[in-house]
Image (cartoon, rainbow, N blue to C red; front, top):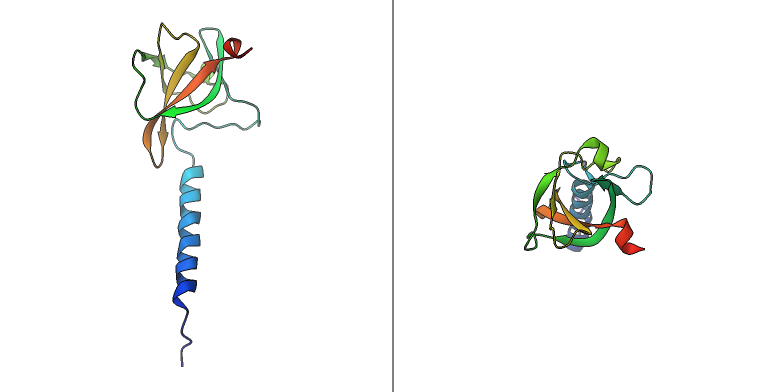
Length: 119
């Protein structure tokens, strides 16, 4: 006779499997996703200025920002962001936003702050 499996055990196993699937999706390589192979703070170099990743990420671009260009390999400095659009605001020169794709949220805008503005 077949052994009956507890329903709570099946639910726990399903939750663990779902968490594993979400983790794999979140960590998979997708276009315009940050990649830091050196375990150093990611740095973008745009117009001779260095920008580091700031905590703020938004779904809607703040007012006053416009697309300035696309990040090249030289600007990306091994962040994996080459090909991503970046946005500037002439009234906030120390902050830029980079359009990125999040596997769950879709298109997001990550803020980067000028290194000189921090010091």
